[in-house]
Length: 277
Ligand code: 15L
Image (tube, rainbow, N blue to C red; front, side):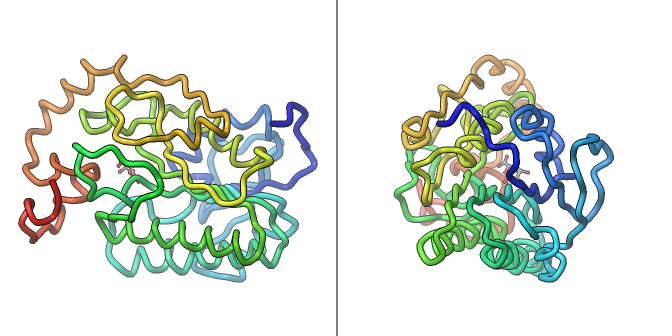
């Protein structure tokens, strides 16, 4: 990967005011000082070298305006949890389509798409999975992430945009519970994956797991390793904290069987044995 970064590129970060955006921007600031931030609301902590362009993803003209002149897009915007169909439809289906289409029209070269572990949440925890598997979304939200990955493949194959989809586990300073011991990613490791997505010369279309170096991982992330990913976060360091938090939550007979946890047990009307493990 190039050591000297081209700082003249216009890089647009959607969802910049959200949880991940707020954690990640300071970590990108050295390599990518002049990010163009986009969201429905202006981030409170705008740095002097950052600019803000407001946009509602569901409004194509606003998305097109935000992406004018962009070289790359970090697409972290949208609805970030399970929700009513209309909320998912507007932000993650229509919004994601608007994003890719505006990117094509603006001549964008690279997109990093924040996908989610919930695209594959109905895989049993007992199974180790790579990225060459059938998707098994666990929610309307998970389906919308699969849709975004599919758009990524289409716009890469048909329009030559280099797309990296990051199936993110859970980002934060430490894993929140036992499930997150398997899927946690530190903000620093996520910033590393974003840098790979922006810079690696071999990228055309990739799906990578957004996870740190977790001993209890359910995912084979060897493709990310091949592209140079060297995670430094280790969830095991926080096991005592995660187990203490888990004890407060108590068992979830369905969610505890599957990788997606409560996203699987919510609204569940199936027989758990028929669904998987
Ligand atoms: C996600 O995709 C969500 O955006 C986040 O809020 C968490 O729920 C995370 O997955 C998770 O699975 O922990």
